[in-house]
Image 1: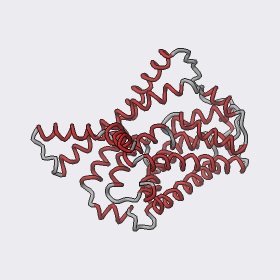
Image 2 (image 1 turned 45 degrees about the horizontal axis):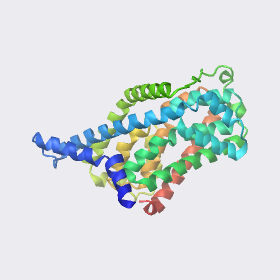
Image 3 (image 1 turned 45 degrees about the vertical axis):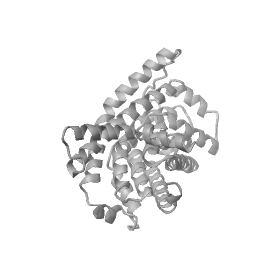
Image 4 (image 1 turned 180 degrees about the vertical axis):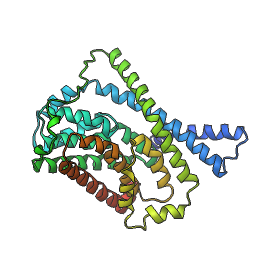
Length: 334
């Protein structure tokens, strides 16, 4: 069983065969793959292709699943539950929604406008960009299944706790008045055949790849620079395990960026192999995906500053606590 899983992780998810193939091709063209420049070229080509392949396959699968959960049906499911159980269901349903926080906000608006409890809608809003099938598979391909599963569980915990706290604070008056009755129309198309579902999934995979590829290329380029050109002692001095503020710094650095998990993976991978603690790496990834500046600007249009500040504060504290816990106990999962 162990041999089978190692094969899945290294050859299917990690695509070691693709790395070996690119090395052979570069060598055949006379490239010195041991040099810093060509090693960076190998990193760039390999990670771009690997992430693109996984991206297209995963978006196809997730989009196919989404055809069974249009926003109206999701709203009906959520309306059956109350209290912390409702927050748990909302967080779990967030795992089958779009990849980035900006694309989740229109759904959040629709749910809030439909009268769902505010705490439940925020549990959904937090979990949607943080946790999905893509994060599980991609993290498994780089860090192994234990870290991937732990990341997903922690992301769901942050979503449930964050939504529960916001629900208890009775912050409904902190919604912008223009939110009500003006929610963006949501796609509730009914897909009543496998052919329609597959056609939708193929279209979503292609359109999403075209939109995300620029973030992947930027992320891989940054990862290649970190991996091959930045001295390890620099990285360790700033974000290394000996710096007690590494998790906080990583969380702050991630906020101004805008990407999803596909764009952050190559940067996280390069940081990890430069000696950055796994908790610091995951804190960086979470801050990018959940608290990116563009998505916060978009969210500000529908919630008032007090609620936005509480949301940012809760998620940031959750990410930082998670980061330090992973740095302390991460060895158990690696």
